[in-house]
Image 1 (cartoon, rainbow, N blue to C red):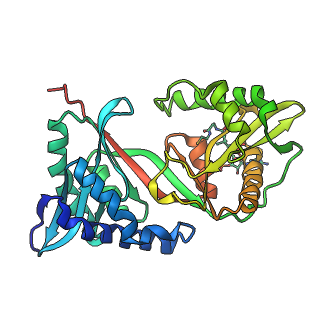
Image 2: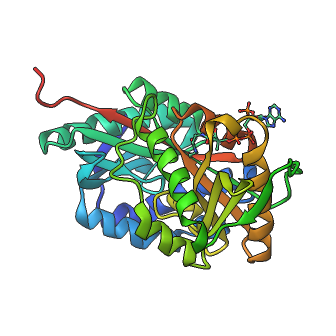
Image 3: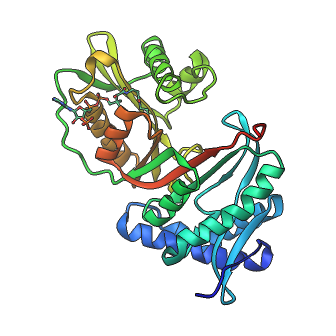
Length: 319
Ligand SMILES: CC(C)(COP(=O)(O)OP(=O)(O)OC[C@H]1O[C@@H](n2cnc3c(N)ncnc32)[C@H](O)[C@@H]1OP(=O)(O)O)[C@@H](O)C(=O)NCCC(=O)NCCS
């Protein structure tokens, strides 16, 4: 087999790179038609790739004069508290039949540059349908860091239980504060260890409760809120390919520990999906940490995974 040639990513390669990602995305969308159609068009991705190529180095893999893969990443002063690089799912790609050797060669090339510049946390997001690529990155020392799922808005047929379910408003701030603090405590503790700052706090929560773009669906036992799920516009903190005016993102969910495993979150999800249909959305997205076991079980039961982020930390001070 002819060898791979690794070259710097420059403007001349960007159209082929965009076409590669769009082709891969179209394949993903055939399996998950809930995804927005727009990212099948290279014109949607080209400006982002052009911008990235101007800001940061990247590499392409060529075989027989043909682009078969590429890898570029944002350079971040602080990525989860470390100088790091992150390649969104539109900033890397490989022909599926070659993804393992292509990604291995590209990472060997880029990792040298990233480490020399002091970037110790390396991350990239991959479409979920290329298992060989995911396996390649696992062998390169990467583990899962985040997961993104989407679903349609059809009812899931959850029972409404004996609890009252309603949309929370500004008057419910104190109860929502308690639930939000519970969620924060859960995410910073073992085994998730998410490096979050302080909880959203009264002001941010109060603003979102008063904002009609957000819907906090809540379950109540008398005057005590036992669970919430927060719906709103497409999340900026999720993978890029869910971004669309037709996407509502879930950006928070918490059931008090004593109320778990009885279908409360499922009932709230069902109610939120009904709200999203009425609000004119076409799909619902969620992102979560794979090591958050109860969340991972819940979301993967109701959503189809579309992107997985992979992370590797290198101790550049060692040795
Ligand atoms: C994720 C979370 C919100 C789910 O809430 P929940 O109210 O327990 O969710 P449900 O009860 O609807 O579903 C949970 C499980 O109970 C099961 N269940 C539902 N109704 C049931 C019933 N009547 N009897 C027995 N089991 C039931 C579900 O099948 C589900 O099983 P699974 O975990 O094997 O998929 C909750 O675990 C939580 O708050 N976790 C901590 C915070 C967090 O991680 N939030 C998400 C951040 S992304």
